[in-house]
Length: 104
Image (cartoon, rainbow, N blue to C red; front, side, top):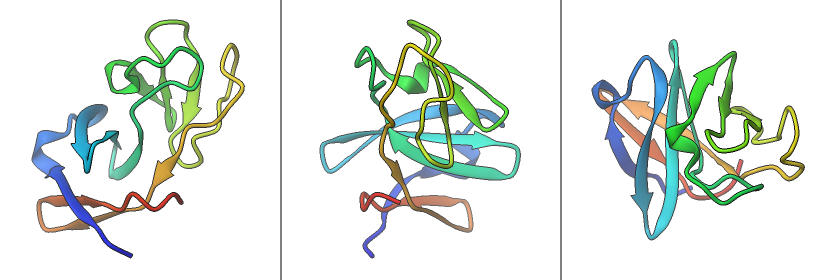
């Protein structure tokens, strides 16, 4: 599996997301406590950036219509979204966060 450096761990808020682009793909790198996740940075309902939403309880909430997505699976946890967003494997080496665009 090929990983690409996405950002530094120190760039991520403790409970929040950072928008990055990897090989032309918009990716939200999300941190909640000690856990770091990556998912496509596009809401499956309204096609807006998920990285601009709030992070809580291992979910990210779309700022436009309030759909929440599980950071571990990409599945929506409430309407109006009904389709999941792709999630990507993450690895951390030192202060560097790496993401593989192969879906988890």
